[in-house]
Length: 116
Image (cartoon, rainbow, N blue to C red; front, side, top):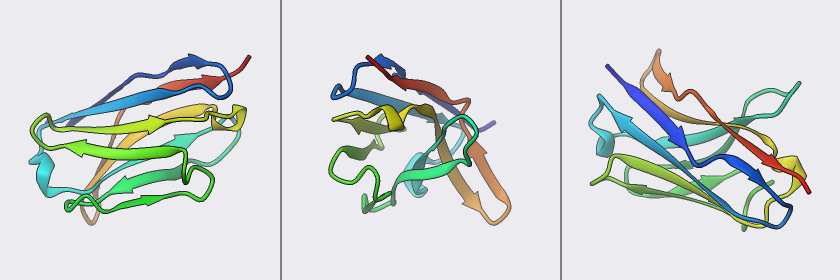
């Protein structure tokens, strides 16, 4: 059974930082690219960052230079370090893995709120 469990969300002031974690189980973690998505109220879910098997990273333009995705294959965990947070970063953040065509998994999501 595949499980993705996110943690690390919370309330932070503008300019602050948070680190999200996503612990994966039930898959050979090192064999799959991983990604973080987010969904703000009334908005579509959007890709924030992804990291390949070889640790090549990709970011949405809105977070480049502020967010860093990384992975620890020994811990089956992917991270999202978020710095210089803005109110527009407020959303539910989801961990995602695509196993193959038609088979993908989402975590339950973790709320990030950026507000003074």
